[in-house]
Amino acid sequence: MLTYSQAVEKIFATVQPLPPVECALDEALGKVIAERAVARWDLPSCDNSAMDGFAFSWGEETIGDRLKVRGVIYAGDSHQDKVEKGEAVRIMTGAPLPPCCDTVIPIEDVREEGQFILLTRGTTRGEHVRLRGEEVVSGEALVEAGTVLHAGDIGLLAAAGIDRIKIHPMPRVAILSTGNELVNLGDPPQPGEIVNSNIHLLQARLKEIGCETLPLDIARDDRDDLVRRIKEGLNADLLITTGGVSIGDRDHVQEVLDQLGFKLGFWKVAIKPGKPVLFGQIDRQIIFGLPGNPAAAAATFELFVRPALGRLSGHPAPFPPVLRAVLTEDVCDGGKRQAFLWGDLIETTAGYYSFSPNRHQGSNRNRAVQSAAALLSVPVGSGTISAGSEVAVMVLRLPSRQQINFS
Ligand code: AMP
Ligand code: MG
Image (tube, rainbow, N blue to C red; front, side):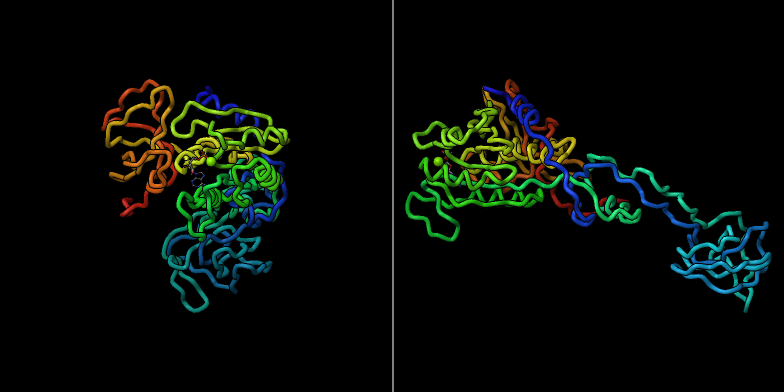
């Protein structure tokens, strides 16, 4: 049986980024840019004032000197008039500097006396002036291909005139739940029936990531129904099924996939929970068959599907964030399988965390996932890891902070 890291290697060897598409800059947040973005013009585009003040041509003006004020320039104006020696022009922040001026003295450093200003401190040449191109020059690379775009990138790219860019799209993900016992949320379950909760959990996770989801109708544990439903999911970039991948009499998912031309990547990984996880492709479409138990489906989503989605969307390193935390209780390894334990993260002091394994860990437990902020990997052969040990955990969400804690 494959180990977890061997299985992930297989996924990365198979899954490639989706072909780039062009989009408006405002649609690119959180996506991976597919080509280097280059500034269309200089930033700033002209020399301009960094302060509300008075612009003049520097000639060693110092405290006590007087300058005659001629006119005013606001941001957005242009000004070509000559400013003579002994003169200044009133200027607001961001307004273009007249060509003959090179220095600005802020309003708070002068005393205004009618048409004149009296300097109340000395000056140096060039102060409070932002020079054309001092931040970015036209043609300069702003963001390299393969970068995840954050709000700050969007602001910079907008300032440099980039209104459309090429990105890797977020994958469209079809989700299929299988099982005769499942009913849709809203329909009252009869004895022996359960609500198809997996589809809601998976949809929520996919929404957090920013993927478009295509929920499919529940497939019964019947080959024909499975074929029909799976076919409906084959026009997405990735199909997730839950249930029916184990060795039960009615676990037909793999068999039906085979009928549809499935190329097996792997089936079964030495992990706990989630051992029966299935991965492969039909043509270019990526398929994950997750176990039906809610906590197993949720864990295998984090461990396998999330990195695959990251790779599809072009992330250079599609791995979950990891934090170091102090374990609050002893934990045991999972025998021959690498165990993953759900747990809560608490920020004990600013930037320091503890990890408390959940009381519920069973793969059938919705509660295991509900209160979990992180997953702890317990490698084969770890034995008991004692309370107080520092461990690295995969972060699902950070706890909110009670205080600012910054001074
Ligand atoms: P399976 O993997 O099909 O053998 O299902 C294992 C367990 O997970 C069974 O107890 C199922 O009832 C439960 N299960 C399967 N699919 C779902 C689902 N979509 N939502 C919630 N529980 C499920
Ligand atoms: Mg089933």
